[in-house]
Amino acid sequence: QVQLVQSGTEVKKPGASVKVSCKASGYMFTSFYIHWMRQAPGQGLEWMAWINPYTGGTNDAQKFQGRVSVTRDPSIATVYMELRRLTSDDTAVYYCARCTHASGCDYWGQGTLVTVSS
Amino acid sequence: IQLTQSPSFLSASVGDRVTITCRASQDISSYLAWYQQKPGKAPKLLIYAASTLQNGVPSRFSGSGSGTEFTLTISSLQPEDFATYSCQQLNTYPLTFGGGTKVEIK
Image (cartoon, rainbow over all chains, first blue to last red; front, side, top):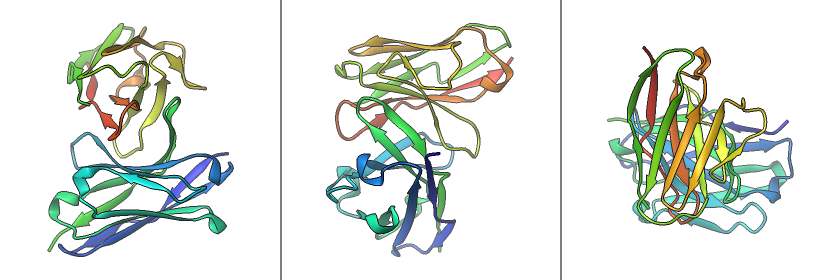
């Protein structure tokens, strides 16, 4: 069965970076884009970026002004999202998801809580 | 593209028919999905392409609309349906979500 399994909870200080992983299984890794979303406490979902696991090509939301990087390691079917220069506004649960324009986001990781606090 | 959901909060009873609206700030064709989210859990895809039911989702859920106005309908609310529902547009980057509709027990 399709699964996306994310790395665990992170606590970071302002100005630091965080790298969250998302390991895919149960389908052909290179066939579906992986997207990253986040959800701040009590807030709605926010789209951050996608990666094409086949080519490594990426696209991210302008809002993050180059602070986000998404990479992948096809040998272990894993995607990574790194967010740099963290502030308290980056405190959120971060999700990876398998998404297509036509069919939405059908599989999601379990979420990774990132807390930014001094 | 901004998505405006209404209402943001809804109180209903088991067996009620519930309708949630999602309005887009510009034409998104049928590139709209609906999700259900329970506390502490990841979103679950219910509807994609505005009206296509995701595999395994009960038929009491339905979606309609195109262009800028969309609706999610639950024909007969069940106890397990009390959750937050969000729409998402997949027509244009950045992808965006509506603010969510929390459905609570009356």
